[in-house]
Image 1: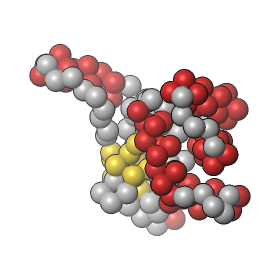
Image 2 (image 1 turned 180 degrees about the vertical axis):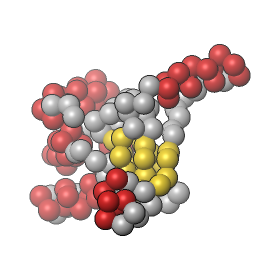
Image 3 (image 1 turned 135 degrees about the vertical axis):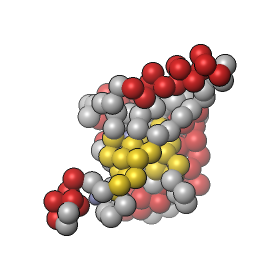
Image 4 (image 1 turned 45 degrees about the vertical axis):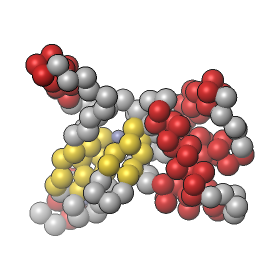
Amino acid sequence: MSDPELRYKTLLQKLQERGSRLTSHRLALLHLLAASEGHPNAAQLFEKLRAQFPTVSLATIYKTLALLKEEGEVLEIDLHNDSRYDGNKPYPHPHLVCNRCGQIFDGDEVACFQAADQEIEARYHFQVARSQLLFYGTCKECLEKNP
Ligand SMILES: [Zn+2]
Ligand SMILES: [Zn+2]
């Protein structure tokens, strides 16, 4: 995982360059994203922030995530009924979703994914703006507990 302090500075710089308002709530969210190791959804980020900032709103979270998404600094993963956000690996990468425990794992070391985008562009003359690849199944931990 990247250095949270460096990552925070990158995120902050992007918002500064856009001239976005940098409220204490926003800055706290950037810190949280920079340090997050998993793929939290907006509600989880909200709950964490609320412990520190009781007046923070869910709308602030969504708005800030949308800005960062536009800047290509968070990767949104659409699940059927929810979105999760990867604040540390904003580039497209596959995700492994465990059906039993609900954890989401990064499959970012699989190289063929980037090649697929390029092949789609070349073959179909389709300009890819964003893509996601999800694998559903059972994670190693869950398999070990109950094969
Ligand atoms: Zn699992
Ligand atoms: Zn990820």
